Length: 108
Image (tube, rainbow, N blue to C red; front, side, top):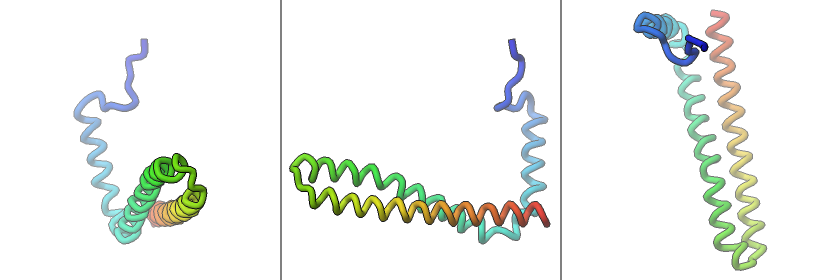
């Protein structure tokens, strides 16, 4: 019934328009290279912490919960808390940096 697609360009001219728009945007964001690189680094740090947490949970289950060593569970719980706090900090810095980039591009 619906003859439109919001996700795909319908022809090559729309794809070229997107590339032309990105080419026009590049000079506007070039003064913000340092912040963009730092924000990208923060994204990678945040992702690494968030991917590490399930591995630690699995390790704690396999080695401490199964063997009923409650002290190890508490230690890994503290490590997980630290990892999630560090992930929160990285996410905060990424948000602040990219927000600053957006504001500077918008107002310049």
